[in-house]
Length: 547
Image (cartoon, rainbow, N blue to C red; front, side, top):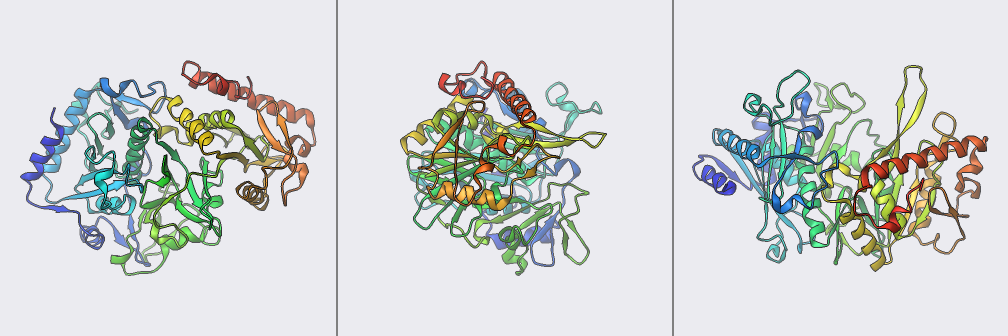
């Protein structure tokens, strides 16, 4: 099926195509068409339907085709297949709907600050606000795009945020909802045909994360490691990566004085070094505190003429006077803001840098048994990369709160479609080749689990991170944590030695050992379930806690 030809034929016959509008034009149209309202400070406020206030993982699918099928881990719960015939139907329906729209917007951007592998992305949509989102989040086409390995292999994305699929046509093909109806939403990636479709989701993250997943498929096959991380560097060009799930402190710890930010979410590690994928940030706004996160707050809520501003605020409470209440989560706790990186003060404009000197894995262990700082060799780093561990808190009816272990492979499971060893092997190879130091920092609890112990003081955590980044942990004495297979320093500058060994901070040592053993078994159980039949290096397997 000639998908692109069908699209081009429709566009050729359309009466009002707005190709590559400049940012001011996209903002002006979004306001004039009432897709967004101008807030008091000049940013744009928009609200989506309730089903579009976050990602839709159960409606996010990958087209199964013979030439890409063998690279994808179909055992991963986030890799949901859709057959080519159903995708054909959806593509035709989407083009029919697009063809009836009065105005269409087309943007040509790239993903990837390193021009040697920048991926051209053409987005076609009926919404000016979606076009503006791509201008905020994707990068301008570089002058030397012809040197990219993807120069002739661009990606096409069709976005219909507010049109719903006619579920009656897709009985037995798309997901059935609890009410018995067929889902009216689909977010689809066709890696083989280099096509994406966002149909029925108005959440900006559907566009962003679809393209992130696309990069995470294509890049490892070119020996480039995609990483869900933030990246910064010091004045000497020493670069560090920060990986961690929500609540681990990634944003706070990577925004450090004296270190320029390359990007806060998505990067690639090639033979040239590190490069940000994006042109902007898509920050969570709930409870955003201007004192704790001044950079993000200023980026979104600085005052400017609305035609210059263009930060998009999604689903945050705004009062009639145009001011926001970021603590109000009645619509969603997932309010977001999209803005260009240049709105931040301490950035590296090129968004590229050297090979990383250090990688920081962040976890927030609410069990209180993971050491606050550990050093990882390559096999251990590959293991913790595979596991992507943190813990979350879940309340019970009696008010008792107990940690729930959370594992998200590569700290971004929903967006990493390839077989797991493809990513972990690349990490091990690159960190050995470039002698990259990897540290595990636990920003969670000390002295006991949540409810008994205390959250690690942020000043202590910063001291440990700084010691790691400054090379001050390379020559200290270490001990082996035999249960979790970690190298734990016996000393760290500006940190009391007793807190470096979790057992020493617990009043009841027997409880500590019981809790630690339980967590190690959870690691082992998850590893066996997720990777038991995968091609994981035996040296990595034996580094799993509980083994």
